[in-house]
Image: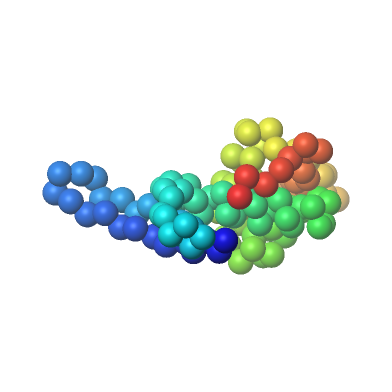
Length: 115
């Protein structure tokens, strides 16, 4: 069974415009609704963050953003949600000299990828 992913854009004067993700199951030739495209992308990115943290152990927002090729603010947004969902820990690492402490993120032991 091979699954293909597609975006379905819906435009109507009677409904809110949306972009959704659907998956084709080529084994039985059926389409399955996966959810809103923005939610799907978030789960995909969170999976990439989990993979990175599994490999590195701990990392800063800057490290994660650079590794994933996204902005630091976007990485922070994903990490904030993952902390709120109790899947990621962070500690503030006091840097020497002036400046704010850097937050270092790591996975909680029972964290699994959703995607």
